[in-house]
Length: 181
Ligand code: SF4
Ligand code: SF4
Image (cartoon, rainbow, N blue to C red; front, side, top):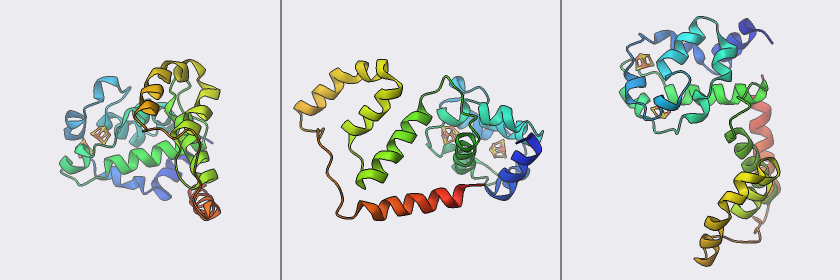
């Protein structure tokens, strides 16, 4: 898919047209606690998209460093839903296979969704076991913390299911169907 098609999807399906209201004041970037880690601050991200550089925007680590603190939305003088649009870009990056290879959060999200679809709720042990298949070194590094949590009874070894986990699975499947461009 080329840049024009991607911009069309973002503007149409994900309501990305709202970035056209951006006056590039930089308030969002100045408010963001993670800009020093990001390839592009939120203001720059929107400028890239307006210039048609969709693939660069979707490959950016900005999407994965956003911690959804919502400061940018609260302070934007144009009432642009910055965080929501970043979520939309995350979805697009996953769908188009454009997540930055070095970043692990997409794998964590993927594992999270699969665990919820299977059991109807999150179980941290299963979640980390699935994640460990892709990032074993990370998982090993987290073992001491997992042990401490287990000893404080904050970690269930075995997952419990909802009575009807298939209903959650159907919800997730419907959400996925609606997200598909
Ligand atoms: S605060 Fe709003 S108007 Fe200002 S640069 Fe950020 S998104 Fe654009
Ligand atoms: S919601 Fe994301 S982009 Fe906005 S200020 Fe917080 S971390 Fe930065």
